[in-house]
Amino acid sequence: MSKVVLITGATAGFGAAAVRRFAASGWRVIATGRRTERLQALVDELGSRNVHAAAFDIRDTAAMDVALDAIPADFRDIDLLVNNAGLALGTLPAQDASLDDWNTMIATNISALVTLTHRLLPKLIERKGAIINISSVASTYPYTGGNVYGGTKAFVRQFSLGLRSDLHGTGVRVTSIEPGMAETEFTLVRTHGDQSASDKLYQGARPMTAEDIADTIHWVATLPPHLNINRLELMPVSQSFAGFQVDRQH
Image (tube, rainbow, N blue to C red; front, top):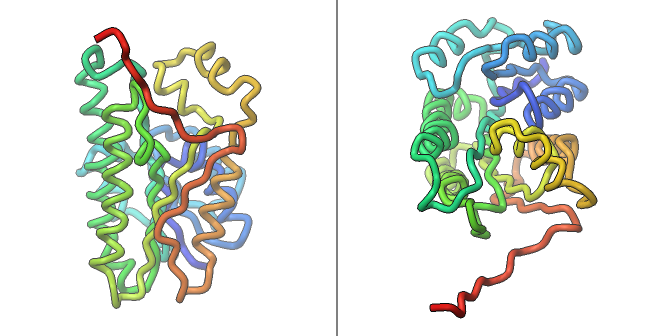
């Protein structure tokens, strides 16, 4: 019987690439996201026997419950949860940032992630499964304008380590994957659709791709069950750690 993975944020970027990667290796995939037409395109591409689309806003707990209850019988035995859904909004320093943007990031990157994880823990324990949470290098390395986004991803990293501790003895593996620069729709979302800003960020940088991250997720998921990757940080060769800032005017 094929293993089952539930992947959030499956309509673009890392999530869509991960759906394709897992389906290609014989897993059944529950793909979740808000954009119904993109989920349906994945089903049409990969087949309804391989992919089940669950369209809902991950911040909507009631909609989440309805979607989980509607999962077909042959997709119910979930072996792996990939908490990929998340976003950054805004690039301004904290004193100029939008509080609405901050609250949206907290609701998506933290509250929704812990809610879904809590819902699926009994099944994952029963199956001796795994949880892979997508954090970010922003969880470790601060940068101007990263404020709440970096804070939410630091939560994801620490929550992953806490889960690992609490699930000791259950056989459940927990990993925090922390990517650096990767070219997806991430910057378009962050800048509220500014294509020129996205192009400028990635131009000449040779960033990682969604497929690179999907391959990494799949590698972690398919390691022997006695191995656990606690944290995995990865960057393109063209990116390294930010330097310190010094203000000499005050």
